Length: 303
Image 1 (cartoon, rainbow, N blue to C red):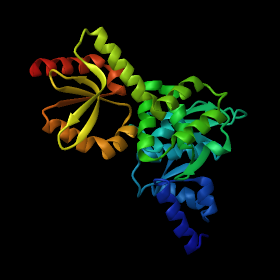
Image 2: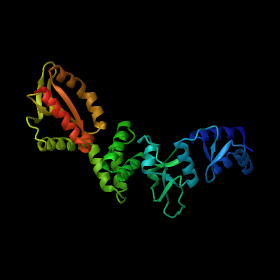
Image 3: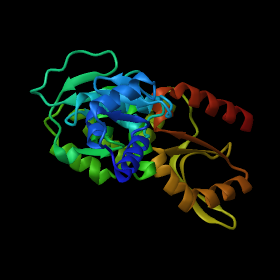
Image 4: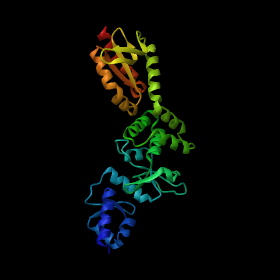
């Protein structure tokens, strides 16, 4: 029989786990097998997986289904890659079914509610959140980039860096420790971009794209004297039309840069009659033709 303290702790556990509980957890809280069976029979609980139950007073959600799948796999299962990124809030869309890793000596049967791979995960790269084990944020970012590719992986890394969920140092440390795993090349590229290489790449891509598109009359890294402000450096300057192109890397760098410099500087440029266009690593990598069309239209209007 459960004590009042056990019941209170059990209710807190259920809330933390989005309304899901395992048979082992229920037994530890003082529920007998017969008591569990009665709750299932009266639909106070309903099966949510092998030896796992959803408490009826809690809504079934993508998170409750993920918890159910993970609890049913056992304590040595770990939520990984894009599923872990979603769990950490680094991706917005819930996976169709969560992806979990289990130790290599396990051979679970295929299941429709969860994708399972056999993989060894170092305890230092594993933590527990809301009752389930999940890869740490740094490993999650690197795994996601490996699975999705550099471009989409960079979006996840950029969000994590903006939120302060990871640091470049933690990404670099995790990448070094797990150097033998699949995707280390993508991980190295991701870290180089995160450390500032995205902006450098974007500038080179912009310069090459301007030449290839036959857009002339510009200079790079050009100093402009602004009344009441002082000297400003433009990334790409079309002096005749008074158009400046500003290049950003990722939002991670953009936020700090904008806060410290760009607001007053851009106001001074606009007051002096300049038009400022912004582009960034994502735009120039994904569809730079859209940006160049916008730039051509601006230059025509200013001519």
